[in-house]
Image (cartoon, rainbow, N blue to C red):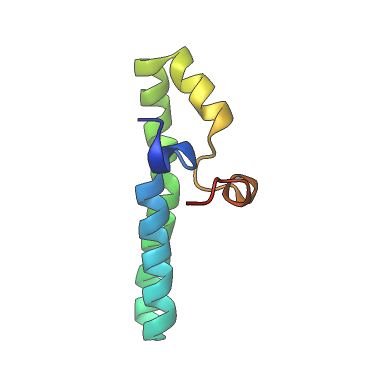
Length: 85
């Protein structure tokens, strides 16, 4: 998948999950919740590192090209230059 949200991030579902966990940690504002959300953010940040070798093996050059034009999470320059709806 290289269109839609996947044109801006190779892992949009992880971006959304990280944002949600950060929002929960900020809104609940307790130590244990912040710790758990921090651990979840760490896991979601590391998951692509485990998946990408497999994707590279399965899709080869296609994934390499996609990887060069699409950031792992988000790129502020891509967001700012995105067409407005």
